[in-house]
Length: 325
Length: 151
Ligand code: SF4
Ligand code: SF4
Image (cartoon, rainbow over all chains, first blue to last red; front, top):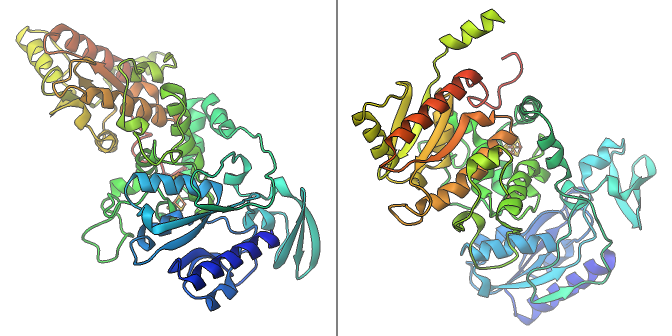
């Protein structure tokens, strides 16, 4: 991964020096080795803090809504999953495509610091990866963890490939992954209504309505949101009414249905560890089954399942009773 | 056993029916003028097209105390605005399936196509839906999905 980072940094330097782009969007070092954050680099000096490693899970696409409106070209590093969000945003006329130079970068799956901590490792100072072994060094020594167990949930089942690229930096071949991303959804579907209700009640009761899932989501980019209270002076925090607070999750998931690229950012950022991807994936699974396979973000144009129809679509009552063909 | 049956008989559900102005609403009218009956606890909300029904309307109805929500529109192919009900069909298929996934009883939500000429069908559909929801009992789940145990 270090070699990839070097290449990226070098390329960013070239682009900035030559004036081809006015800024580069990537990740910069955080306070700890495991919390790099999305950042814009405008000068070569700023690139000293540039980083690309196993903790760069953040999706940079949504930042481009604002940044692509600025003067001058912007170069951005996109992982495979990020390119779907990028396409979806171009499709929704949120990103100015002409103003963006996309550099596709390889992704060998990213780590979830919470999962590492759950293994009892804390005060982490660095990680080193050899195949499926991850050597984690901390203030207390070294521990070897099994890579598949510490991946971000979104990376566990990721099969995505770059959908957009103006150029690429790919040095290694990606390991195969063949986990069924709908496995958990199917498990829930097989439960009784009562069990499902209990499951979701338990999960959603943890929600503190921090709005992180909404704010990070590339499919959630409306200027005005039904969950905002226009009378509240504070943007994007207070609820419009008690009702919207309660059914937030149903509405949020429905709102992104057919547009959610399954980038997994919502589950990644949720401080309460609510498996929000299980909500989105239910819609994706239903759409695939009823209206034909559809992957949002694969194309930068065309209709989505909810903005199109066929005359022979399944009847809602049949779908509910499991009788839809 | 005996007790349960009596209890269920006493329960009168609140039913919200979203009816398209061009067909089902007129169908309800026809049912009335043909002296066909349907339960008085069906509250009809007239909409210009079934596709006017935002998923939030359905959720709001439940949150405000509905025990069942039914959407009625023109038969596919007969939409006054040509294609509105095709969108409704996809939307509601996904929404209702999703609600069921969250544990909401599938009998509480329904979509039926009723034309302006189908007064008898309107009455039959409503009677059947009210009967189903009455048997099911009160909606407790879709008022607040986030309520904690014991609260
Ligand atoms: S990120 Fe998690 S806690 Fe925050 S609003 Fe979303 S679901 Fe709730
Ligand atoms: S709902 Fe979650 S997975 Fe879907 S696009 Fe938004 S952040 Fe990504």
